[in-house]
Length: 182
Ligand code: PRP
Ligand code: MN
Ligand code: MG
Image 1 (tube, rainbow, N blue to C red):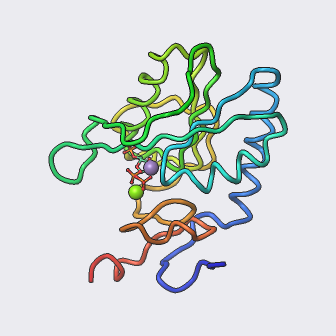
Image 2 (cartoon, helix red, strand yellow):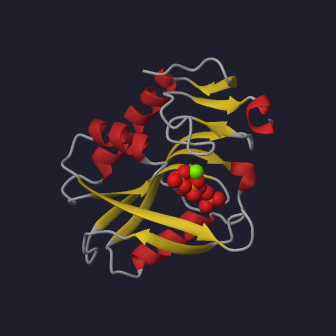
Image 3 (cartoon, rainbow, N blue to C red):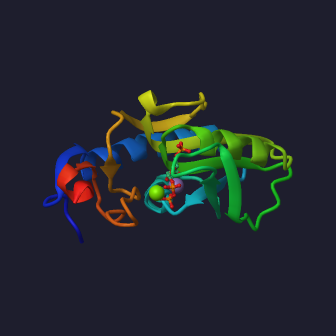
């Protein structure tokens, strides 16, 4: 397994801190959704780690499904215009849906996604996110279950990538500038 040294400037959240917080979130989710046939919807690819860890700490039976979406528009900035690359297999009519995300950055992806899933007739659509960059918000997103608020820095690990790398780090860390400046 990888650890959190080398290229990383500063560890923001250790593996232990993340797992402890996820256990608290899972306990709350288990209580809130008891008897509700909860559907967890993970957003590929960043959410794979939090989906795997959070879902296994939830004490009630859950179903799992996945979406892949891409924000597009001019340049690299998220535009709020979202395209579905891989859709759900599950019919959402009457379902209680919990979207599982690694991070809320601008909030544009999730605000679009919540509305999209609500329009499919879900009974409820809520959000669980491991991380949120509060200062980066362009739209307010109601997050029911949140791991940590983090500063508006370039962070990687625990599902978050830089050019598709670092997702498998168990911690959340700031990337050293020398990695992305070279
Ligand atoms: C990242 C992250 C969230 C989204 C948050 O995904 O995993 O899904 O951006 O950004 P927003 O709040 O500004 O909309 P990304 O598009 O990088 O794809 P990935 O999950 O495959 O890395
Ligand atoms: Mn993502
Ligand atoms: Mg990414």
